[in-house]
Image 1 (cartoon, rainbow, N blue to C red):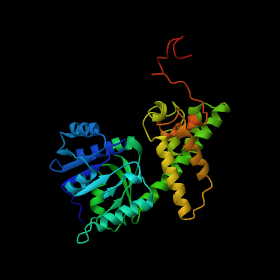
Image 2 (image 1 turned 45 degrees about the vertical axis):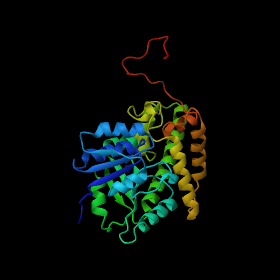
Image 3 (image 1 turned 135 degrees about the vertical axis):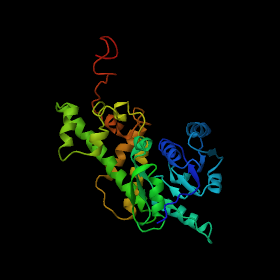
Image 4 (image 1 turned 90 degrees about the vertical axis):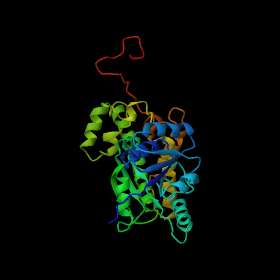
Length: 318
């Protein structure tokens, strides 16, 4: 069982997810390991180098191609399939056809010694990335000889690593997960709005859901109603988190994938329509996807900086 890691690593894509994931990797790699990074934002590149200088050598490059030329193991996480060019481990959420096409091209790039390509999308959001607590869904069979090394590598950034069975199946798991997650968030938003309009306190309703059949990870960790989960992005103006436009993109990918394999969806089109509309709403665009609660017209309780110090009468409060 070979768990030895390469000596040089490449990283393409330092966005909301990629940046904290790459930080976790650089912190936990041996100091002797070298890291080559690329992002379209040059400021981000320099900030990353400054933040990780104490952990080992990091070099900014001018292109993804240069990363590929310098590194033995490359990880990429970019927003869309059209952005994926030359990579070996791809953590992006893109369509399965593009992923398999890229994998085939990578494998054929050196016939004598074919490079290996793995789709390995993640779940856990920016908070999970910052804590090194992501779930990895890897497009490889459990008996693939590269799995021990991948398990070792991904353990630097995540706590749950699943080998889904083969090329593209990591993405199949990711699209299925995000389809369910998006619809659960929408259903939770509708249920919270319904219960509150019927007279229920949002925290009371959330607590009831937690111990009832309507409970979910969304309700317990990122309840869409501001104030129910005080430390969640939903209580911070929906700033940060998983943008509503990205949920629209993932729902689109899932619905399209379902059509390709003739999987009947009853809720898919309605869910996609909701996230599409929310992503175009100026009150919701660029905010966490649970802002769909706002798009629904949900009641948003007034939040104070601290419970013991409400604003004075005559200020922005009541």
